[in-house]
Length: 202
Picture 1 (tube, helix red, strand yellow):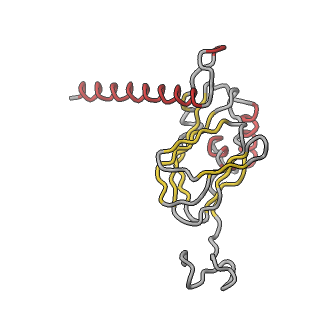
Picture 2: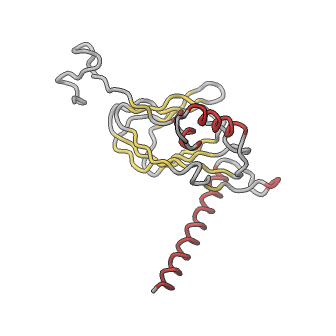
């Protein structure tokens, strides 16, 4: 009946909200946010119309250049990168420490990487085999936008021939970059071609 359907929908909505709240609190603790101290609020998902979760797939030839995430809210947001699948992908997630040391790790399925905006520079090395699927989401404790947010918005409006959401523009600098795969035996043939012994032949 309509009443039963409405009740089930309300129950599901309540459960989803509770799960989102718990997730935000757990992420807050993981990144060392002092929730409750000096008015610090737990993290929650950013508005969907600004920064909806993104599904990204890394395949051979994809990589992500070194970059530092823009601070788009008054309190730096946290970007969560959840690896859904990793089918033998050798692309390595790398980050640079304050002393210049570069660390790297191949992200396993069901792993979560948390990066605070304005924090360490990070990248993903070029994928040569396998694939990896991730879901990226933005978490924030405030909806007060930063000056950088407004600069990005003005830049987007000035550089686009049609309306472009700030959220999509924000991700342009860090989205997977496609490059043409090269033969692993460059001395046997042209650098951009594949030889008969290459496992990644066209």
